[in-house]
Length: 145
Image (tube, rainbow, N blue to C red; front, side, top):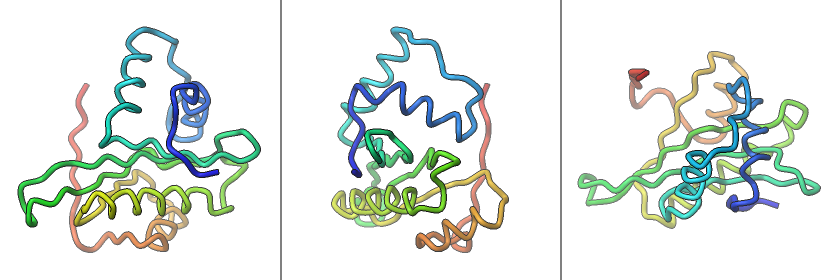
């Protein structure tokens, strides 16, 4: 099942993020619960999950960002694309990205942006196969402590 996350998905999603770049699951805290509640209640913030046999196996986040250019049309930003290692290659992340694309289209977005830190050719080819290109823009990141 492909769907948007609900309150009860928090810790399973955090566990999934161990397959992304996280080293440990954060401690349950008021701050964690507040951030999660804010994320899932924000109409522009979409936490997409792929569930198989009652378990979340893949996810991505799609955020719709209001914009004053391009005919006052918003754009979408995709982050935290992840699939459990043992479930990769089954089309789950592709399904999440397609779901995000539909959200962006329904939101009248003029583009979707996605960044990856991976230099792995298979990851690059995955995103190209999903319709993304690395030719049109140059991305810069400034990390904040």
